Image (cartoon, rainbow, N blue to C red; front, side):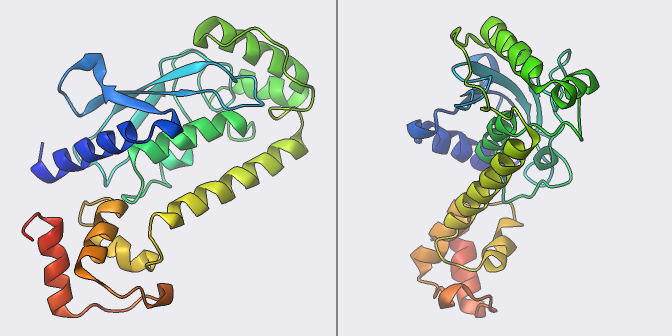
Length: 246
């Protein structure tokens, strides 16, 4: 595994460990040293059938990471239209055609957590579950909760009627809110710099926080978030900082 890729993965894991508020955990599978095979876990989101459960995800990083997405599947069985109830396979754009090197293992897990709040029955991984959600949302909530109790250790309690996506309108609103929240979180990582400007360096294999840190260390002007061409001297200073030469 290349040294740049190893450093990026190690930094991503360290960043997750240094953010206890997210309640997301990632570690090498089996507590080994292989950084290409990880195990992630997160709590079920509140006001859903999955609330109070803990969900485990098998994560495998391809040799082209971060230019190709991680391969993730749920180890914890669940009743959800976008997750296979048999294999744990996941249907999520972030892990497929919507993947970008800007994204991280943490952001992918956050997207999975959000998916539990905003199921998409019209783009299912499990047709049986999707059909139940469309035809009988209350029955879907009941079965999803029973599975969360049985397989994810969720406490046995009633889910309030109307919560957790019990109708199409609430699902749509929650999906929009989560999408806006994710977009704001992504843009906050740029610290006011233009996204395209930062992403040109991200495409070299570095994550957004690392590139932003290098920009701030060199003293690059944010130009009110506008995109512009950096002078050659600044390009050299930033590159040297990214590769640990400054």
